[in-house]
Image 1 (cartoon, helix red, strand yellow):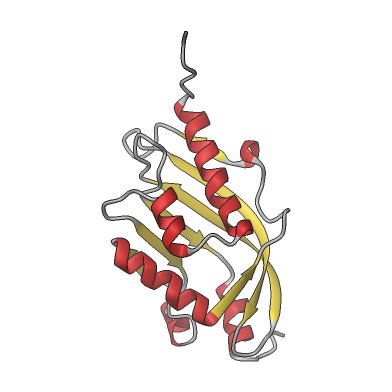
Image 2 (image 1 turned 45 degrees about the vertical axis):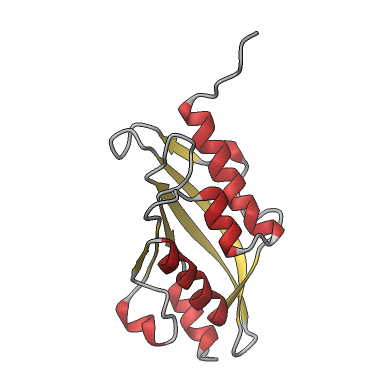
Length: 164
């Protein structure tokens, strides 16, 4: 009896999709890190301009290591709330997978759309954002999660300002 062994592409695509779907189920940051990230030295980077760190302190810094990644989630959730819907993330086939990138560890790109809320002001906005998942281990756990979002909209919402 043979056991099905998924291809590297299938593994990275399914693991990345499951990671994105975890946001829809409200999985805790600790469980998310346990289930989807490498055990040793995971990284999270939310890209953004240095000037925005006064209101958005999770931007422009790489959080390296388990404790630092938990700190990223703590800082982020004090400032913003993510309000995903069933249409926020693409299906597995909507994710771009390159298994040869990063010396064969692989990279997955995800384009998404969602609603966010500034906790201090209650202001909401919708935006498109992108994830780059990389540094995968043999089981398809993520080594580095990078986020590109809309820091200007977040900045304005947190500061209760209008963009003109």
